[in-house]
Length: 114
Length: 110
Image (tube, rainbow over all chains, first blue to last red):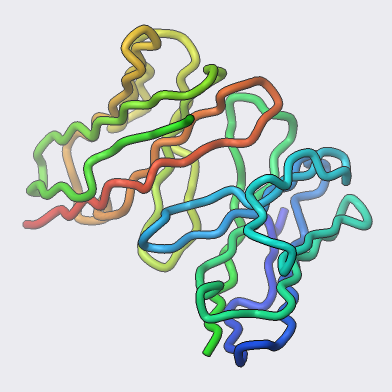
C-alpha cells in the first residue's frame, strides 16, 4: 500500500487566498483525521471522520476552515480566506477502527501564508 | 479539561538508556500511544498501552500507570538515529481521536 497520500507537500500563498489541502487515506481504513502542527501548540486535532461522516469538528479554529470527505478515498481541508497565523504543517492520518495500532500519518503539507 | 505533559527536550549519549516521561489528565482513558517523529517527517507509531504495566518491543519499552496518570517510554542502547521528537498521545474514550502532547525532542550525541 502506498500509505496515506497528501498533496501538495508545500504550499505558499498570499493572505486572503483560498487554500485546499488533499488527502487519500489507506484503502480499507474507516477513520480519517486532520491535524495541524506548530512549534507553539504541537499537534492539534482539527476534525475527524468515520465512514466519511464528520464526527467531531470542535478543533476547527473558525468558519474559515472547512473539511469534506465525499467518498472513502478522498478528503479535503479548505481554508478561505487564509491568514498568516494559519501557517503550519497539516497532517492527514487514517486508521482501521480505533484499536491498538494507532494511526498512519501522511507526509504532511507545509503551508506558509505570507 | 485535558492536559498531557512531557519534558520539552532531553539529551543523551550513544549506547545509553533514556526515559521519557508523560503525565496526563483527561476526562476518561482508553489507551496511551507513543509516536516517533524525525525532523520534517510524519509521526510513526511506536507503542500502545491500555493496561497497567510494561510493554517491551526490542530496544523500546513503554510503561503505564492508570491510577497515576503516568507513562514513560524507555529507549535502550541509544543510537544516533534515535534523535527525534517523541510524542505521547491519549485516547480518552473509545471511538474518539487521539490527543497529543507537545512532544519531547531527544538529541543523541556520540
